Every structure is written in C-alpha cells, then in structure tokens.
Amino acid sequence: MKKTILAIAMVFTIVLVNAQTKEELEAQIAAKKDSIAALTGPIQGRVDALQAQIDGMPGWRTGAFGTIGGSLSNFNNWYSQNFPNNSAGNIGFTVNGFANLQQEKFFWRNALTANLNWVKLDDEDDPDDDDGFREATDVFNLSSLYGRKLSEKWAVSGLMEYRTTLLSNFNDPGYLDLGVGATWTPVTNLVVVIHPLNYNFVFADDDTIFNSSLGAKIVADYTRQIGAVGFKSNLSMFQSYESGDLSNWTWTNSFSYTLWKMIGVGFDFGLRNNKQEALNFARNLANTPDPNATFENVDNDLQSYWTFGLSYSF
Image 1 (cartoon, rainbow, N blue to C red):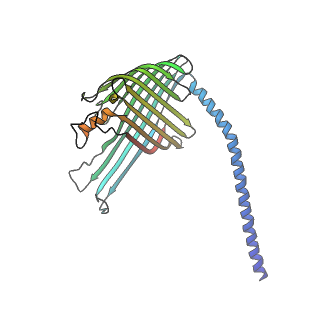
Image 2: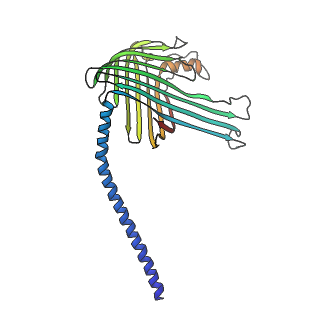
Image 3: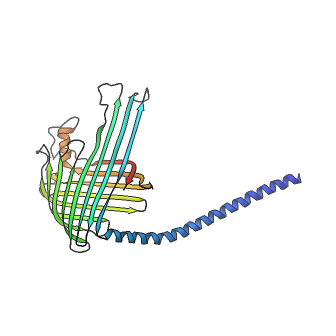
C-alpha cells in the first residue's frame, strides 16, 4: 500500500514538474519574441529607408505581379441539383506590369494591367447548350506618363492612357486619353496626375451613344511592397467638360501575400462607373434590349469584379 501511494505521489510530482517547466519555457519564449520584435522593428525601418533610397536612384525599374485562379468540376447523376450531369469550370488571371525610368530631371512611367476570366457550364443532358468557355471578365489598360521635374515633388507632365477589352468587342468601345498638366509625387510610392487639359477619344461602332470630348483627367496610383505583402491601387477618372454623361472612372486594386519564393495568394477587385457603357448594354447587349433607353432613364449601376487565387511576382 505504501509503495502504491509513493508511486502515485511520484507521478503527480513528475506531472507538476513538467507542467511548471512547460510554463517556464513558454514564458521564456514569449520574452524572447518580445526581444526579437524590439530588435527587428528598427532594423526593418532602416531596411525600408535604404530601399526608398534605391527606388529614388536613376535607372529603370521593371517588374510584374498578378493572380491566377481557376477550378474545374464534373458531376454525373447528381440528382440533388438542377443539372445532374454537367461539367463546369472557371479560369482567370490578372497581370500588373510596369517599366519605370527615373532620372534626375525627368521620369517616364509605363504600366499595363489585364484581367481576363472565362467560365463554363455544360449541361450534358442538353445537346443544344453551349459547352465551351465564355469570357466573363475582360479588362485591359495601358498607360504611359512622362514628367519633367520642376521640383522634388512636382513636374509638368503628359499622359497617354488606353482602355478596352481583348476577348470580345476589341476597341468597341475603346478609350484613349491624351492630356497635359501636372504630376505630384508626395512620397516614393504615390503618383497623382492632375491634367486639366485632356481629350478623351472614344472608339465605337455606335456613335449615337459613344462620343469623344474634352475634359479633365485625374489619376492616383499607389504601389507598395512591405515584406511579404504587396499591393497596388489605381484610380483613373475623366470628367467631361461637355456632359456628365460622358464622364467615367475606374478603380482597380491588387493585393498579394508571398508564401514561398515568388508564389503566394492574391486578391484583385475593381469598380467602374461609365454611363455610355450602361446605355450601350441596355440597347444592344442585354438579354431583352431596350430601344427606348436613353441617358436620362438608363440604370447606370456600379460595375465591379473580383478575383482570388494564387499570386506570382517577378
């Protein structure tokens, strides 16, 4: 009996010692993590400052990043759904590329953005349905900004920006902005373009809806890489001097988190407002076209898209 009691006491003692040791070790780990955070904070600040100096040095800066997403599925005799025999898929990718030249007296910034997505839903019991992939998201933007520096933060500038779709209705419509004005660069990663003299050329087959006009162009672009996190936000606005119906704006955003080397996860989303496109859709592209739609009565709903998937950068 004494031996049994002694054995039980020893077991409790060992468990208690191990528990205390574990708590002590966890406390030591927490203390060391605090020490690491206290040390790496100032170091990261110095690294960021050095990177800012590198980014400000003369020369070319090029790169690209984006998101790839997709899924494929197939169902056979899955009776709990409306189409028990079907194959479906979703494939899409985004590209954000840049080539920027920084010199002492001038800069030249070039950017390309594309977001393409295809979807498929094939009802295998219906021989007449569409069994191929169809375009779902179709965005293409190309811009070139040249600036002659007046000071460290201000420059006189000229901008060319072209926007259209690639998969369908290429250049119908297509938008070409050409303008001059000023560019403000308050920090290394932010560029704000203010061009009060800008002509918005609109290319389209239906010139009763799409019209070119003179107006003001405002662009704000912010691109930043902080450790494993990268993001880019771009707002492009055109305000027509002729009519608000001819004005438009587009806001695109890209986020990425690097998991291993150049691969990670990414998320893209965009918003757009364009009354000319809304009217063209109502008259010509909707399932039930409305020939009586006008700028006054058309539903100009906010346009949006988003993509989530694997991200890449180089």
